[in-house]
Every structure is written in structure tokens, then in C-alpha cells.
Amino acid sequence: MRRRWRGLRVDITPNLDHTLLPMLEKQMPIQEKLSQLPSVDECLKSSHGQNWLESWYRKTVIRSIREVIDSRRKEILNGATPDLSIDTIAGDIEKAIRKHSAYKLRPLINATGVVIHTNLGRSILSDRAIENVTATAGSYSNLEYEIPKGKRGKRYSHIKDIIKELTGAEDAIVVNNNAAAVLICLDTFAKGKEVIVSRGELVEIGGSFRVPDVMKSGGAILREVGTTNKTHLSDYENAVCGSTGLLLKVHQSNYKVIGFTEDIPVERLAKLGREFKIPVMDDLGSGCLINLEKFGIYGEPTVQEVIRQGADIVTFSGDKLLGGPQAGIIVGKEKLIQKIQKNPMLRAMRIDKMTFAALEATFMQYLDEEKAVRNIPTLRMLTEPQEVIRKRAKRILTPLNKAVAGHAALELLADQSRAGGGSLPETGFPTYAVSVKPLNISVNALEKKLRLGNPPVIARIKEDVLLIDARTVQDREIKELVNCVISAFS
Image (cartoon, rainbow, N blue to C red):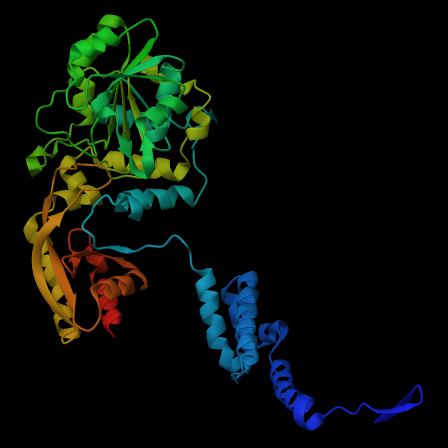
């Protein structure tokens, strides 16, 4: 093609042979491939799309379709030639739908041997508790309604009688966790006042949550007495002044100071509190209702003991040694509990109907200690005889020996479990575990495969082998656990 410009004849024909032509030849197939990509609407109208819309949420289906189409578009632009038919990409779309439809909070298999594992949800609810939650959550309830009188009632009335009966306390109230229980007690009795506490009891619990920080949030002024290893009654007595609002004892549930030590028992501190007319509060933390010494577990006071020893207020958790849902239980003198009930903060800390249902069903089982130990999973796992655990471990080992032969060396191993959850820190629980030493992959790779499986299996590594602790594996989980391990090696 030629044109005249200011009297000159200029040839502006492009050199198709050496520059633009190869580029155009390359671009044309890409454009053709891109044009073959199905639209979102086409995918939705297909038989696959109709099935997806029947089974899953529309927004999730559309998101997944767009995700897969975008992925194919990127493949084409990178020079690939993928099959673009709806029938072909349907599998990937369905995988994406299932991924986006899965709940983020998932059940998993705890093979760590840590019974009250904070990261894994602490205590497992008993069957009775689950049944009561299902029944209550699936219908309307008398949460704040007095059926006999036909008028509005108080939600705490449903549960305080059973707590009083079990603990021997005059009254009780429940909030959403034990930190909240401590916080509202401090706010009620010691706001702007001093709280006397031993230096050896200024604990830090999980998530860097410290007693001094809780006091500050509750508006209380910390008054430390004694030393890390020794605190005398005279230390408390000398610290009492006109601005003292509370004498606080904190149970060392997640650590122990041993050796040259001394602390003041609740009984003596309560006597001092009565003398000065200052309330004595004991933050028990774990909240044990059964004397565990009969099972060879020492060092954990029961709530009943502390109440009998004269503590005015006792706080403890619902999801630790009690074996129930997350909650903070406050028991003690009626006049003090009544003051807490009038605190405006209580509304922000109250528990919902599902927690009430689970907690009441858990407490009810303690009316028969033998049944409580047998039926509340946390208690059962902590007190289970070694022979029962060994038999469970063999039920895991036997099918694995056949299935992963040549891939791993397996053996039955005696080991130690832990209570966890900041409870019984000195106590090791003899257990049996299946030791898995992979032969073709690293133990870390095996741990990761199990952790990313469906369901996830959380185990622990010790001395370059993977341990599956049978103490925390539930009987109903054994078949699924075995399949997960086999899949990890396949």
C-alpha cells in the first residue's frame, strides 16, 4: 500500500513475513480458545449446574464456576490447551463448591493424648449434653420464662439449684468463661480498691492472659504480697488497709513451684477475711467436682472442699475438669452473688440457651459420680485404666500393620498423656500409643498429610516417630483414623 505525502511516495505496507504475521498467528488461536470458554450462565443452565443449585447455595456455585473459568483462562494465556467443555470442567467446579461450602470449624481426631486440649476445643461434650443442646436449640424454650407463673423469669434460675446442690454453696451464677467470672467479681467487689494476692499466684494462662491484666481491666488495684516461693499469713495481714476490697487466691493450675515453698490455705485466709470483714475469693480455674485421688490423681482441690473451707466466692471453668461447655461458674455466699447479679456487666457476659442446656446436662450427671466418670468424656479419658487404652491402641495397630507394611515401622509403645487445659500440670497419665516410623517419607511429611486429611488427624512427634495416643482417640473414630493413616501412605 502506497500513499503520497508532501510530494513523496511512501510505502507503508507492513512486513507481515517477519514481524506482525507470527504475532497474529499466535494470537488468533488464543482468542479462539478464549472464546470457547463457557460462560457462567451456560454452566448454571447445564445439567451439572442445575444439580449444584439444588444441593448448594447459589452464591457459592457462581463463585466456584467463576474461579474455575478464570483458572482455565490463565492456562490458555500461558500457552496451554485445556479441554473447555462443561462436562470436563464440571469436576473441578464441584471440588471448588465443596471447598467453599465446607465449615471452617471442623471436627477432627485428637491423637495427641492431651485430654483437655485448648487448641482442639477443650472438653468433648457428653452424649446427654449433646442431646439436651439439640432438643433445646431446635425449639423455643423457657429460657427467661416461668411456666408455672406464666410470666418473665430469670435465666440463671434454671441451673443454680443443681450447682448449689453439688457444691454446697449458698448461690451460683454463670457467665461465658472463667476469665469473665474473675473480671466481674473484681469489678463488683474491688473496683477502685486493692486486691491482695500472693506473688506466687500471679499466673498467666493461655494467650498471654495474665491475672494482673484482668485486675486492671476490672478496675482493681493489685497489691502483691510475699515472694514467688513463700507467702505467709502475716504478709496478707500487714497489707490489709482501709482500701482493701478483696483477698484473692489463685489456684496454680498450670504450673507448680516446688522445693522451699509455703502458701496459705483457703481456710486460714478465710478466717483472716472474716476478721477484717473482707471477702475472700478463690479462683480455682479447673473446677473439679470429684475427688480424683481415688484414681491416683493428686493435687487438685474440689469446689466443695474450697466452699467448706470458707471461701466467700469461688470461680471455675465449665470446659476443663468439669467436662462441659465453655463457661465461667461463680459460686459462694448468697449476698455476694446477688451483688454480682446487679452488675450491669453481667448482661455482656451471660451465656446462651445452648450453653445452658449443655451445662445443666453435665451438672446433672454428677448426681451419680460413677456414671459421671463413665459418661463424661473428659473424666473417662483421665481415669481410664491402662489396659483399656492398650486394647484400643491394638485395635488401631492391627489393621495398620497389614495396610502399611513396607511403608512404615509400627509398634505399640508405652508413653505418657497429659491433662492439658492448664490442669494437673505435674501429673503424667500412663498411656499406650501406636508408634509410626515412615520409611519412604519424613515423619514431618506424614504429620502434615494427616493434619491436612479429611478428617484432620492431629498427632505428636517424639524422637523422630509419630505417636498416635490411644487415650484421646474415641472408639467410634478408630476405623476413620486407620483409613486416614492408610491414605497418608497411599
